[in-house]
Length: 86
Image 1 (cartoon, rainbow, N blue to C red):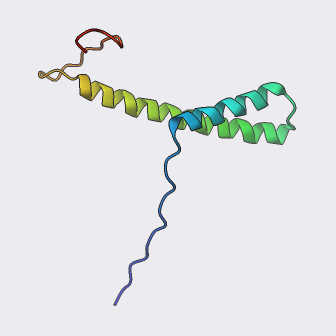
Image 2: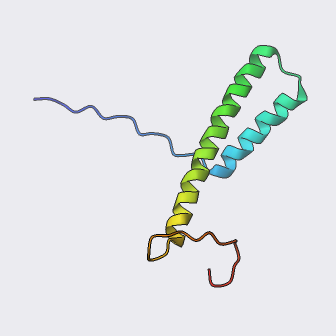
Image 3: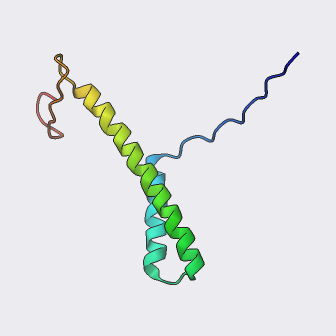
């Protein structure tokens, strides 16, 4: 008899606003210029990771919006936010 191993549950995805807040804090730390070189490199690497994750989330959100705006014929007509009839 084989037993299945349970995989640990993944942590909940961090809210986008908190992600951007963390990125802004890292940018401020780097701009202050008070960090030693090694810490600057670590902070920069973390900032790149956060920026990529935030960008990926924006891409997903854009695709969801396009799906919601898709016309019956499959075309997508971009409209400014707040446009009447939207």
